[in-house]
Image (cartoon, rainbow, N blue to C red; front, side, top):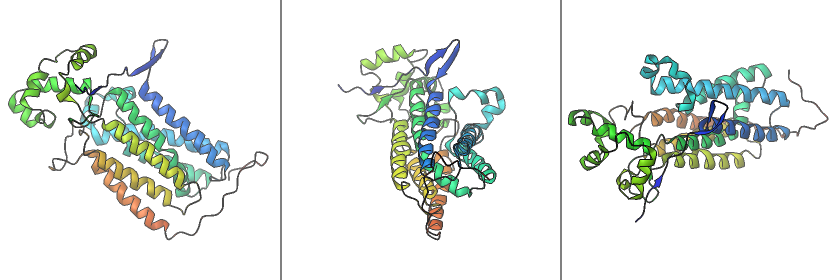
Length: 331
């Protein structure tokens, strides 16, 4: 008998004294380190006309934009009523709750300030930073997977996975009245048999779920591992394409355009198999459109526009590698 995979990782990687260090935070750290190493490699090739300190400034403002923009974006786009009622929850970054689209706006704002400070054309900086981003996106999705959050639809495919947090959600649905279930999109997609079975899950620990999983009793609750699919597309595929494409100088706007277009298409596509955020459900009465898809549509349009705009730009100059003996100064 085939058993779905069981996803029950400890969200805490280790402790430093009494302070827990979460895998989710380490994924962000890994993304920033990768961006620094790759960006410094490209800077030395003459792809960004600033010193090492200038690039460090760019990365700092980018990191600040990711964290502040990502968190503020999640609060505003996805769960404003919760954070208005519990404002201290805004600072609980280790519990997840970051928005890519908010983070993107934050990075663009930081890049705009940096471009003004260093007198570098804004989209030259955006084109430089775009290939450095996907590794962080992929690692972030691994963080979502370790946290056991943002799972996909119920599935009987061989790659389906059991997420204990989803089982607890089903248990809460089982405790509702038929009228409440009908009004709750999260609960309405469970069959009566699944809700009856989920009624037994109340108070179960991960260990109890694992024991039940080994018997095959949880097979009907397997879900699409949408986090891993997003990691593959938004992380691996997007990085490989942009890194290879940007190996030689491209016209202004081209790299940014491909980033926006491909990310938008990848995110829009995977959302079809990913459960929407429970507090939002499907939007605009469609029964299928999620907030992620709604926010990705402007990205697709922007990507197409930037690619069109790039065709009207002159050929890029040949980059001059930075020599260790010749310092690069900022204006």
